[in-house]
Image (cartoon, rainbow, N blue to C red; front, top):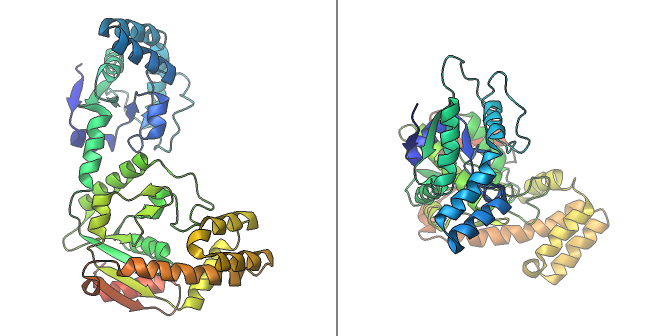
Length: 374
């Protein structure tokens, strides 16, 4: 059985049905990885450092000997971990550090050689060593030509492309995320940037959400979504995204892609202030006071000293609605400036008058306004 080296594009196609094994160190993996990949480190972070130092300061041969010494004691464990990932019968214990949000292992017919995809940083000795072992044991192995570095180059190229995009706009509290979900259920192609970023965009945006991904991981996830959505688009369809600032919490939309977004048609939901205020209070008023106060303090410089004091005092007095009235007024002004700061704004702006924050009703209004058939 031979090990097959494939391009990034081929590797990604194969990854839809077969497990991806990232043999880089735990530290490299935790920084960012292919979405859905399993961590199968050949070396610990410390072992990688020792091997790398030997390579730079002594010789390639010395580094290989050290690597082989570390590797030899792990061979059986590595094979058992891959068996567990593939859910093969008679496997050893599953790797306890492999649960990174990836999909469950695949059931593979016993009459066929299980397929696994392996990569390291540059497609060098680490992936070659693990691929050799797995091939020897009976797996069908594909390795990524150029490794994770080649994948990252592919990721960055996705942001330079032109995409058929529509932007959903609206002041804070318009229920834009809920409308995107309604559009998705209506078979439209949607990318929820805030979901990918694990952040709602405002000072309160990370409340109740998991830790944000690293910038690199955010880019990996976004590139994968773009490639997926464009592959599913039918003729005369669009990818829907919410209008965002370039910065979403601690991550940034890549410059090239953000610039593309700013040239697209914006469908702006005009919803009465009081309706939006009620929606915001219902969604954010449930959080602990200390977390809300800390969020308000973080925007003190932009909000202004007087408004900050007023908002905090309302909150401490349990007058949540009036607290958020101050904040919503600020965010409306902030978003309006961002909305209008586009070239050819008047030709890109489309306003939809909506009576209330209602995802089903407003998505139907949007469908009628834009004219998509599904």
